[in-house]
Image (cartoon, rainbow over all chains, first blue to last red; front, side, top):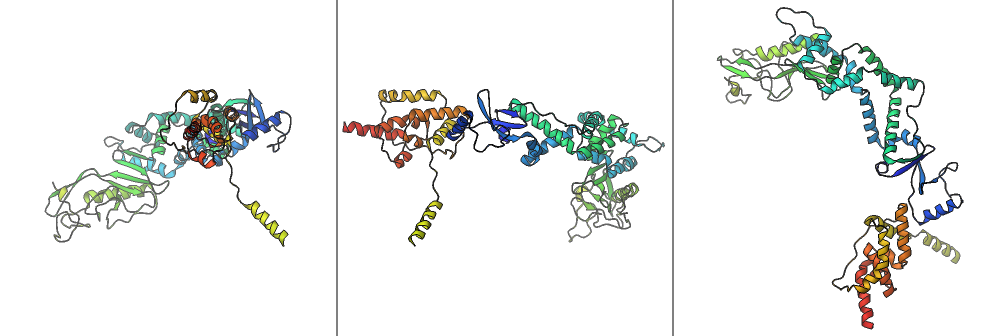
Amino acid sequence: MKQLFDSDLELVVETDFIYMPLLFDPEIEREIQDFQSGKPLENPIKPETKSIIKLKGKHFIKTLNLHSFIDNYEAINPYSYQRLRNECLRKYQLTREVDGHFLDETLRLILFRITPYFIKKNKGLNRKKISDEEILDLIGEKTNIPEKYYKEAKTFGDLKPLKKILEELKNQKPLFKMTENGLHSDRKLHDWIHKAIQAKVMASEHHRIEKALKLREQWNQTKPEHIAILLYIADTGSLEIDGFGFTRHNSYKGEYLVYKRTGDYVLKDYYARSYLFPECRVAVSTYSPSMPFVMEKYKHPFLLGHKTGQEICMKDFVPSNEFKAENVIRTLEEGLTAMRYGYNGRKRNGYHSLDKMWVHIPTIDFEDYRI
Amino acid sequence: MDLLKDIKRKRVKQRQKKPIKRDAFNQISGLVRQYGLEKSFLDGLDEVEDYLATKELKFARIRLKVPVESPLFSLVTKEEYFLTMSVIKKVDCPYLRFAHSPEEVLLCKPLYRLNPALSPERLMRYHFETLYLHERTKVKNIG
């Protein structure tokens, strides 16, 4: 089918059927001659409509019903259908991800409750609460949002096309006009079929359009720049400002890792020798928040090994399992404090000591950090 | 008992698989499509006899046939169909269904004229040029 529609053939549309150019062999030629002389065909496809038509000296044979072809296109060519569907949904910003992330409570909580705590907005002693709009302004200032998201924000804010589609669906108007009868180039018919399939996709997404429209009406008062920022975050799933950031979880859908960078810091050993530790990201997962952990491959007296994703050893800290902004902030702060200030050289607390204490027992070596 | 045996034998015979014989249409239409032959090829069919009469072909080596995968049931466009039918009509020779290339199609008629009783095995194995030269040498020697 794909080969047929990608060829340079001329096709005929007649009474909702596609007629393909007739291929010949001696038997077919005999049948055609009989047909032209008035004899009926032995096995006509449908007796009430013509099986073979002649146009501009060429014979065409009845093949597919256009309605049936469009209705069953998903089964005929699943890959192409998906591609067309995605293209169509993207055109109206109707992808599940975008609407889903706009309604995602976890993301809103991170963005508007946790982020303000970690990013420095106020100068001096002035510590007023930052509003949601100010947060988005700040993100806009500090993050380079690609131009395409501003364009998408315009589409997102334009409710007219969706309203029109919804109205047409409610009035049960057909979303596409049948193509005219007659000879069509293969390319023209191909384009028409694509349009018809996209119209069918829109009809099948009736509920989603309604939902999206409601959501967009809620966000209608929001500045387009803010919409662009939210679209950017929804698309990339991550953001970082002033060493604080979050990134979408690869394994758990709709969950995030919230992190803060430690910056370089110095720890002292038993003999007061200094060790310069490189920066790392201390993170907490929104999926059942528990102990904070280090995202990178890292070594530290409070980490058991030298690998990625290690939980920080914190003896007296019991994290809350409830996902709340205060709990995430507290866990992150506890983790950062433990990493930067928790190690006591005199007590040699943690899994390892900075100075080599057990000469014959292999343990993590920090000599390369010594300054 | 004889009648019963007879019926059983007939039924076994009916059930036997019968090989599909490739006909000239499937073979030639396959060549028309594969080599993209055009109407000018028909002129070549008219001129081949004159060409063979004037040109001194030499028997250099035995040429074997080029293997060709022709379809069992060929369907072609209107133009290809009429060209195929014209070729079949013009050559009108039982050797045509053994032709594996346009060159062999051209040599069909002259070869048939030299020897109309060549076995299908030979026609399937050797290139028509080799067979033609061989038959022509035989005729010359007799002469």
